[in-house]
Amino acid sequence: MDRRVAALALVLLAASAAYLLWGIGGNWRFVLGLRAGKLAGMLVVGASIGVATILFQTVSQNRILTPAIMGFDALYVLLQTALVAALGVTGFAMLPVGTKFAAEVAVMALAAMALFGLLLGRGAQDVARMILTGVILGILFRSLAGFLARVMDPNAFAIVQAESFASFSRIDGALLPWAAGAAALAVLAAFRLSSRLDVMALGRPVAVSLGLRYEAMTFATLALVAVLVSVSTALVGPVTFFGLIVSGLAHSLIASARHALLLPAAALIGGAILVIGQLVFERVLGLQSALSVVVEFVGGLFFLWLLLKGRIR
Image (tube, rainbow, N blue to C red; front, side, top):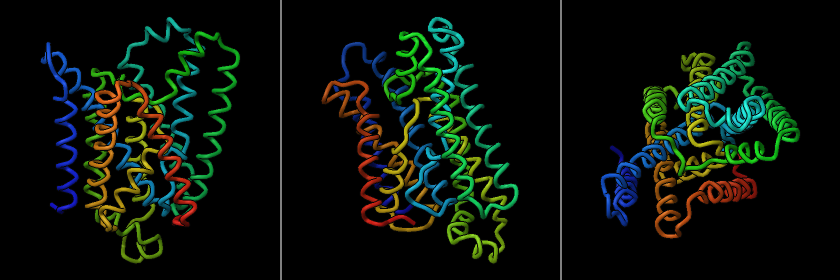
């Protein structure tokens, strides 16, 4: 194992141990079980978003883009708004958690796959057209969600607002086996494609000349992105800029274009950021739901820094 990846693994292990054991007391079995569930959820989300962002940037040939640009977050908000508008506050609260999670993942993944299949069917070289279409659909989804929000009851709107922001402290333990299983399969598939991703990163003309089936590889990579982002979004809510932070740190720390190193580094960095951040906010500052706000703020600043530094690729 590369020393840098091993060091990141040790950092994540230490942060996880601190999150589990810091200030534990009283009924330690109950507390440990509760914290273990949150920890597992953060690791799933961090790894999923980190790996998905690296994959998406490889396909788009641009390190400033994240999968969020395809409208996943807007579709998630529209789904929550439509459910609350159709079922009411009581009906929404009574929805089976597992069924709701599976439906959200299925809708987001199938919508993404339909978009990818439709726009890449005539050539994967037109990735820019796909990204632009995703941006337009995201605007459409946000507009529809805004329209529904304007005509609903204020109490229902408060529920929609609560569901529209990511929360790493309300992860449902019953969903973790399914989310972790789907994310693990997608991450393992991405690792197995590492060498082909290295070739894809060279650009379509070079990749095709080296014998890579570029169209099929592009579609397969985007399918993995769709699964990973759908699972993480359905589990904690939409996170726009987190992947940009993770990918930027992974490229800076690894200083290599090899996906065999970038992918595990991104997974470890994503998990470490969430665990350390939640540890600070919960144990040190005594807060519960500020991490997602801080992550989005820092990610937005990092996005602006990339623009000012001219590092668009």
